[in-house]
Length: 338
Image 1 (cartoon, rainbow, N blue to C red):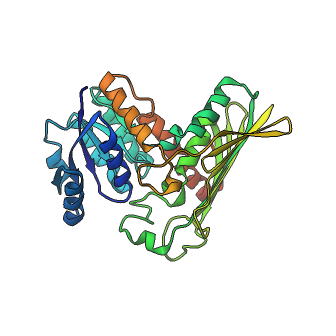
Image 2 (cartoon, rainbow, N blue to C red):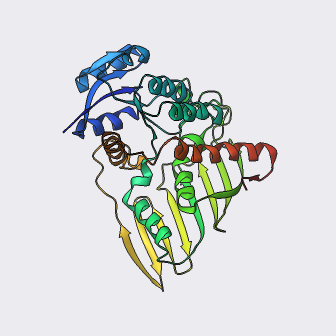
């Protein structure tokens, strides 16, 4: 079986999830890690038995590396991805694909130019068994038409979390709770709902005022071309990381996702459709368990020469909604797409 040479850029918190998934994947052969912090980078390289680079551009010169995982600060995603694509490397980048639309578009342009390689964007929660079952219910029409949805994220981030130089700033993180934590849930809503017709939202800084220049709380109202509507609320001002809640209301029933457990409520009865699966990647539970599923899927598509579905244009959809909530909050106006 062919193995793809792999490198990872950025040895921060999320890198461990990628590295453990790569270690379990028979399709991948980790060649190198990159980090500007030499101590962190060399320690990670030693732990996973690979080479270390301080500058990702030196790593890109290697002909035995096929796939690059980008796990850096948001503002570095676009330049690193563009350079990697230009060097003939497939790229799988953490969400969000970039810190703003303009940077994201440079990635889309590069992916369109260098057609021999693929760009993928991490939205691992689409691979959760519960999410897959919810999408199936929407697409099959088994519960009738989808009428409305809600998504709720109530998490906690301390002031210490933002001591990292790039977090909490518009220029480098691109926002706060919306672009970093709750973008996963917003992505699920647009994945279930389809084409978005309009969105209106607002943001505020409630618990971290004076600590960050971005938002720690946000809400939004979405209208879809199908007539479905959705409400969305996210905050990092809660006291704990509470389970994410997503609800889909159909003509003939209701699907309620609480954490990783999916319930069906129909005709006065309730049933469990999906329960949590073991998390073997060492991630915090609220990150989900499906990085490994998505990484494997990306590698299989690359090896088989099939276009990867969660590509740049698909990853751009959630980023567009996030940035348009910011714009709507500033203007007080609803953003319309059609």
